Image (cartoon, helix red, strand yellow):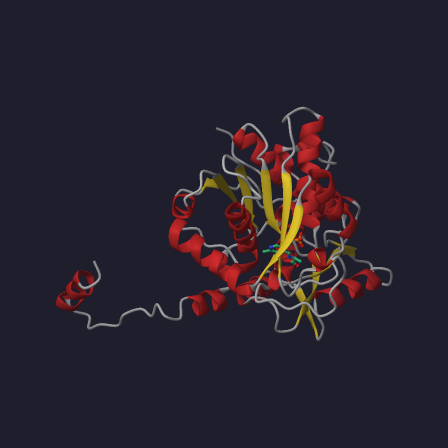
Length: 356
Ligand code: F0G
């Protein structure tokens, strides 16, 4: 057995690093590809649905895949500080990898609009948090501007090294299955991840590691769905704060992925997204954050309508961990209050027998 030391080491020959590069890693990647067992039975469809549970990365989201590369390359280039705008996950990831590298992280976040766990993480990693009275898109614009005026490296997904790191998730899926899925479903916000998966699948197909590329299905929240509307959205709104984005940066790349794969974009209400999040927890034991559940909400919708036919192999990316957003979880389970009883054998026994 060799100790797993992160995705750059694993896919070194497919990433822009040299033997001299100091690799900044927290052991990211190598996340489980879990086959759903109960949900397909529940919906009565003959489909193989796998979830790529990216919530099990070191800071709890897929961003770590991109961040290990972006920070490694920033340090290699001599940078002493990184900056990003974020809806919460990128900021947590940037902060952690900056600590690991011994450099500074500045993060711009929309005030009051990031999940509690993400804020707590970013504080613990000791990043310089700059809250703005504006949304992610405004933060992104400011980050792009300030990088011309201060010595900071941008580590949002407009940094191409982020995409290179994140493409490894597609490699892992093909390596695990032995082939590419028929359909790949994922939530779309800033659109870096759909760009990265498409790049990964394309590289593997070009090198004949797999024979085909999946149809890419990008799902958005109804109140933040520029790809579905075909135009930017100025005031995006959704309970899935991770994808509360109206001006995605990787606009052209995402459209290329959709076009070249024969895929599509669709949008779902917050209710549908939250229902999918709860379904995954209650029927499969998998707790992802709300934005992540857009992938399953979309897949189930398209399986139900027949757009994704029976017999298909489907992978849904679950981009982040549910424990990042405890407030939503408590709201989702408001009716499921814990029972409070006397601390006696009798009372515990009754609580069990009453609920068997
Ligand atoms: N799911 C989660 C949990 C996310 O945090 C994000 C993006 C997405 C999906 C969408 O991915 O932007 O590549 O299309 N979060 C960014 C952030 C914007 O700042 O953490 P995308």
